[in-house]
Image (cartoon, rainbow, N blue to C red; front, side, top):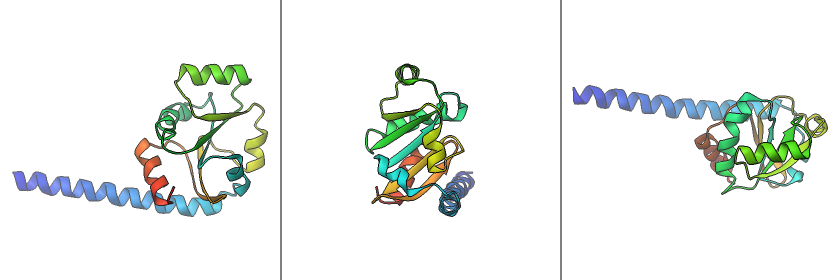
Length: 150
């Protein structure tokens, strides 16, 4: 019985490792096809996080971004989320303390080629090393940051 449990645990572990590696490889491939401008890396931040208060997936991702902002330089860009007061209030209510710019009309998002939310752009030496869209766990954020050498 114990050997069966060990076997299943080992298989589950290998599955998650392979799944993680494959997802990162897909991320590298997608990054080359996303057409996000490298200029986004010149706004400041090792990780640039395009999000919206209206976006349900962003709400789940933002707390993970907040956790890693204690170790990495994160710049949030709130897209079409209201005026400065509304965005500040939203961030306070949700305990988000990373640096943030308000892109009230979505001009920056369009300028940099971001049209899916949330989008996380990982920058190093002024260039995009990886970008991701959709939900990302804290572990996923850490692993991607480690993978590109932040």
